[in-house]
Image 1 (spheres, rainbow, N blue to C red):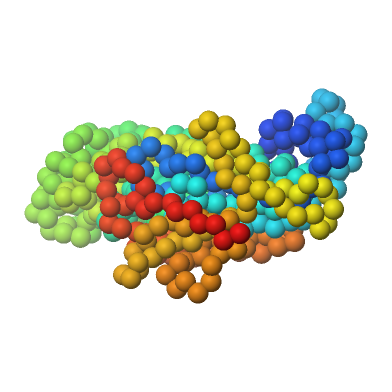
Image 2: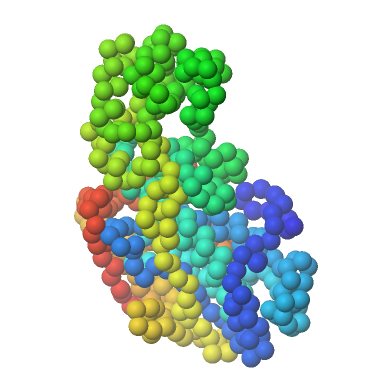
Length: 446
């Protein structure tokens, strides 16, 4: 176990150093042997493109990545595993025993919007200390940003009506916790996942499943038990048997003060209209209607005209609504020719067909027109231009000389995402498949 202290407070966590690929450490082993491990290097985490049909992406996972970095230590147990299996040699083990990232990181903060080639994370240090971070950083950013990107589209289609994350049973147990966090950043209101509430402070919510109704001798008995435990403001699941009868029972038991009903099957638009009319006829005009049942952003959009007050989303959300990864890559974009402290950096780039990269340390700006609407993602090599009031800088410092300096609440990340969305052209919210809503422009100020 590794003891860490960061913006989140002290805690005991397992080392994150083995959340990596075998070849990261064989590259390190070879670089140490060849005398190139300590060359000054710059790596960049970026997307070559957006997932097919998407018009924008959302950055999430920054906080989790910083937490993983703070616990990235090779303890005795990890080193024993690596040496016993001949993954590393003695010289590499000696280096890793004292491993600490001492370099710099800049990146897009959580909740920010991204586009093709956006330099989402820039990692600068020695080759040795930066290369071993590749896998853990990519795994966090690729997963969390995929969830946040899907969540943002769902929230946009909900148009002010709350979305509830409830996909824990549809993904790996720890992925579920991360998914709840990412969805919350992108605008979901609550999660069903209690660990996300404990670990990250995401508000939690939940009432009952069909099994609770089936446990009792009658639906009335089940409703009486739930209302006794949770009060009349609870949400009753009404489609176990006869929906209309269930609604009438719920309203009777709460004297018209029932908080909400949940519809989990059938034609949700038709049923919502019928149940709204029934509720109103019974005097329960304030009782809300929540719908669930394999929703995604397209179904939420289709329900926009129905009298629905909230959406519970599971499988589609935690699988990125068809795009479970963002396709981010982590590439070396600049390095020195020697390990001398004053050795200049020179750009390096990959030229493989379909997988090219652009060399050099990048800056990134969001170009805004006179109305404050984004018109381009501007990426340049070298120092950014100054004095352009219509260009909003996107990179913020995350790590300075090995110390994590970035600290932000989820509320701040949520607010940033709302602001970033308001900058985008209206076409960004179209559900039809399309190209990125703004283009990526390259500039060179080196």
